[in-house]
Amino acid sequence: MKRDWIILDRDGVINQDSDAYIKSLEEWRPLPGSIEAMARLSRAGYRLAVITNQSGLARGLFDHATLEAMHRRLAELLQAEGGHIDALYFCPHGPDDACDCRKPRPGMFLRLAKEHDVDLSRTWALGDSLRDLQAAETAGARPALVFTGKGARTLAAHPELPRRFPVFPDLAAFVDLLLENHG
Image 1: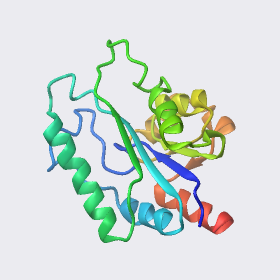
Image 2 (image 1 turned 45 degrees about the horizontal axis):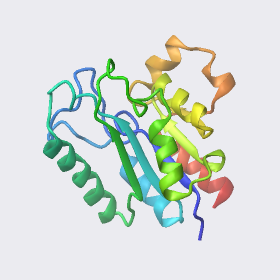
Image 3 (image 1 turned 120 degrees about the vertical axis):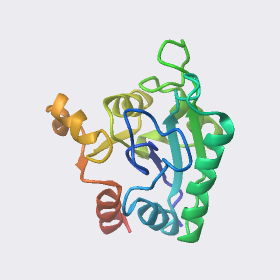
């Protein structure tokens, strides 16, 4: 069984994103095919990590209990499809807090690597924003961009990205190609 890791951003990769933030369990809605794609990875033996900025906590837009409810819903939906999350990290800080965990800084990636003995050079990291790609690249992971969430906007603002990173329509398309090529 494979023990390679796949790192996923949350908002815009797994669930719908919003410029007004995902602030409640009602607003947390999985993107079509994302839960199934994650379950396919898990069933194929990949280990899944979710690494996400959640500055809505620092901004007072939601509390830790609400964030935990969103993550519990994700875990329940994934478990119902035969998958699971092996690690979940979130940065609760705002953009002006001088933390090392808020993407584009690599702190959460490095923490995952240290706590779970992850070889980041073998690890894909999917995101929908430039800061997701930058954090993954700085940490030594293999970044890839998805069009979902803010992905299309990110690509429009940075048309050079496909020369540096693979680009996929969504998480399911990434999983299709990965499993087709690597089982």
